[in-house]
Amino acid sequence: MQAIEITQPGGPEVLQPTTRPMPEPAHDQVVIKVAYAGVNRPDALQRAGLYNPPPTASDLPGLEASGKVVAIGAGVTTLALGDQVCALLPGGGYAEYVATPAAHCLPIPDGMTLKQAACLPETTFTVWSNVFMRGALQAGERILIHGGSSGIGTTAIQLARHFGARVYATAGSDEKCAACMDLGAEQAINYRNVDFVEVMRGQGGADLILDMVGGPYIQRNIKSLADDGRLVQIAFLQGPKVELNLVQMMTRRLTLTGSTLRPQSDLAKARIAAQLREHVWPLLATGVVAPVMDQEFALADAAAAHTRMEGSTHIGKIVLKVG
Image (tube, rainbow, N blue to C red):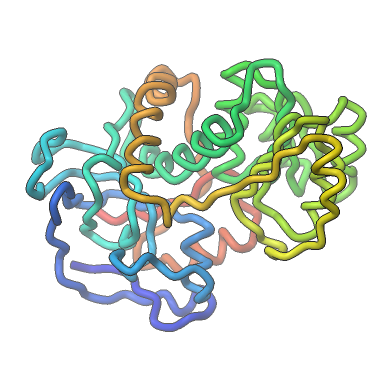
């Protein structure tokens, strides 16, 4: 099969076409003939040598895809040959075929294309598990979503708004802020010229903050939280280390937590998938929530896709057309 491999740690240019053997399904796995693969920040981190795949995962990048089931491993009873699915992957999505646990596959929502569906797994698994499971967002609460125009951000805005939260988002341009407002944000904050700390404090503070920036944002996030507020960290684009005064956390009863998706167990991911099927997939089928699409690239142009993503000019998801 044709695939894109990381030839060495580095910039987008290290993504090069290669030929690999087709994967075989292990117990409880299926093999998917990939139609589209989503492009995500963790792919770029892996390419740069900063995010190694788990020992049992493919070394090829790609954490989500859509396509057709073409092989089924022992123990799989929930899928059949020919089923169209989108799936969270342990890796290997930048290829014509990929293996993944059957329990991490979800049906293509009614009325949605394979291209759209390829954008769903990484974002919905991340948002649901962090905003609703870990962050316990409730109706009426104020949530601040950093990177509101990203794939994660656009999904989080829509879901938080649907479940009754008051949504605030940050983005780096007026165009991106407008996109956040169109998706349901009550206020979109251009962080280049407006201080989100002052905005949130003026509103009484955020009950929940979803952050992927890290670094200097940590202290500012803490200042932005309401008493008993929760900060959920899902990445650290500006660095993982920061000096922290625990007095604020203790006296204001703040919760600082976070997670990464890829290292979690297959069972943990299957449990997230089951909740998505119950709570989110009906919203996708009726169009209440929809992926925001940015641009499509051919598989052979994966380097160009990474260049666009890392340029941070995109709004929504970038995909690779594979099959």
